[in-house]
Amino acid sequence: MLKKCLFPAAGYGTRFLPATKAMPKEMLPIVNKPLIQYGVEEAIEAGLSQIAIVSGRGKRAIEDHFDISYELEHQIAGSSKEVLMEDIRDIISNCTFSYTRQLEIKGLGHAILTGETLIGNEPFAVILADDLCTSSDEGALSQMVSLYNQHQCSIVAIEDVPEDQTQNYGIIEGEEIEDGLFKVSNMIEKPAPEDAPTNLAIIGRYILTPDIFDIIRNLKPGAGGEIQITDAICEQAKQGKVLAYKFRGRRFDCGSIEGYVEATNHIFQKQHGAG
Ligand code: UTP
Image 1 (cartoon, rainbow, N blue to C red):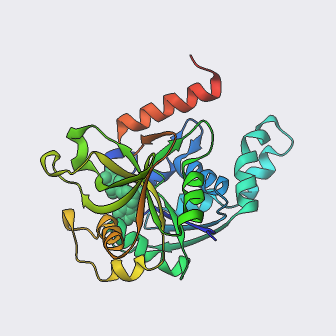
Image 2 (cartoon, rainbow, N blue to C red):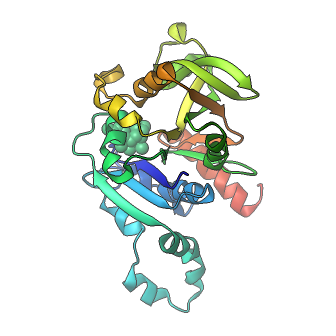
Image 3 (tube, helix red, strand yellow):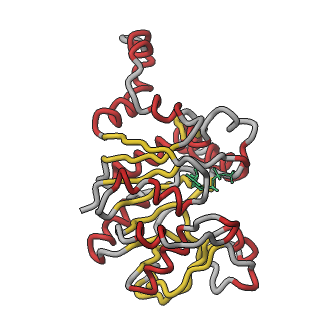
């Protein structure tokens, strides 16, 4: 059974400089909630309450966010502001949080391997908090957990991207075995459009079986000189079974300014009624 969700959150967020000079990208707010809180809420909805965070230097605000602030609680006790703290209080009381630091930023695969000490030998989910997923019914990760319970293998979330954008994503190739569900035969990290076998791009939601750690340990740096998780999952696909799933819902790339603004408008309109 899946219990743990890993959040790689050690990256520098250079596309958001200077905002991310002293503040973690994962703490950027979409309206009034930091990005990483949306991710943790998605994990909880999927039944995963053991939250493991790979952080790094300059990321202390994440730990403080998922902790009690006694001064603040004292200050707002009995006031109308308490309602704004309800969600985060629930999260803190219903989840456990564990942290480890990635000492050098060597890529997402390396960040996930750094999280091994928090995960151990069990299957786990991964959320990249800068990909914000919304849906009108079940959350993206919850949909993937249902699939994991049927298939017991690694699963990546995918979406169609414009053909001229494949160089920004890991791209999968595979056979569609059910509507929106693919058995992966190959994966390529950031292919140029002319080299991309499809326009099915991996987005920041994964369920991984723990053999992934040994595979990453033996990987050589890939695209951009980084240890790429795509290369490790591709190994799994060649050894056995990996599924790719077009989840129901919408993804916002909040690691880019444009996606961040779109997400902000979308969430604002959801909260305040379509305007
Ligand atoms: P990104 O490449 O989108 O994030 O990595 P970044 O490097 O922080 O952003 P830019 O490109 O400089 O603006 C995707 C996710 O993987 C994590 C990041 O924190 C982000 O959540 N990551 C990436 C790590 O934790 N460690 C790494 O070595 C690389």
